[in-house]
Image (cartoon, rainbow, N blue to C red; front, side, top):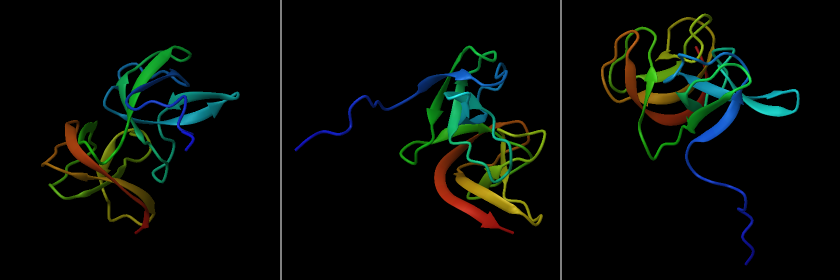
Length: 138
């Protein structure tokens, strides 16, 4: 049997920042193709897929480090607004991309990516459990 899982590794990865990510530790980021190169950037829409938690920010073009979300572990991510344990969490809106929030009642399509494991208040790095539920339309 051939092992096709070569040149792979678990855990955090380092990529160049596609924008200034200094001070965004604990925010969600995604991988974006920038001129044929994989780079970390903050999500750009509420239905986007911020699937990594930024560990170490960096200036644009320098290396940043992030951990991929997976359900085998909980994580702490910056919260917009408040949440209760069990709340379904999605990306926050414009001006707060990279933060998460409880699923709002406003009409729209949101990417549900986690469940809150504790009560959270605005600006807190709230403990979450990834649960890639996917897009939900309200």
